[in-house]
Image 1 (tube, one colour):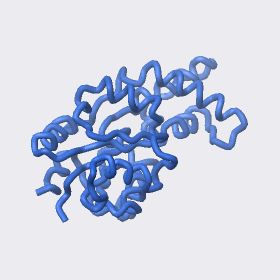
Image 2 (cartoon, helix red, strand yellow):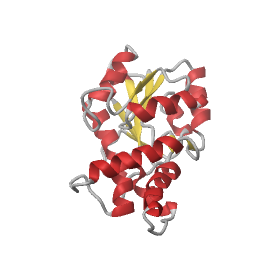
Image 3 (cartoon, helix red, strand yellow):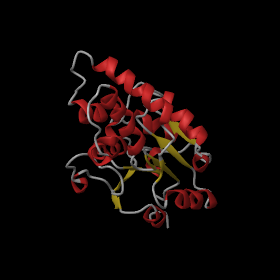
Length: 217
């Protein structure tokens, strides 16, 4: 069955947001008189958002008693700077333009909350042609549950099996597979710490954005 729409994860797939995510967490360290960490230390866990950044910065997990307070501080820092250094990965803008030129709808399905996703998309001129945007709190469940990608297909008025979901994390592939979508692992993204994307059961592995277009031919 031909692919009629392409859905994407946001952080680590469409955009490199590690610089702003890492800076938001690192500010928490320097505010406490702790030494700054280099971006390279934060980058591998950027796909895990606040949880990953707090783990790097403070060795903290959601089980820690003050995790919620620290997470909200991180959110405030990130909210102020979330578009300062974040940019699309090389080849993303051109690939999205080509999808639009071919009249193939595309959308975003991310675990990032609407609080951050919607303002970011509004400011990102390259993302204005997205025909659906599903954030982490748009539906009752987050990835790897299939509900978010199924909602995106519903909004596009397309059967899930005609959609391709592209992501850089195992959760993305699990979500797409559970929704009976075709899936592609994006190897230019963050991929998580010590992840072997060849074991994710993705239908495709794509090494650059332009490779997505070849799947549509």
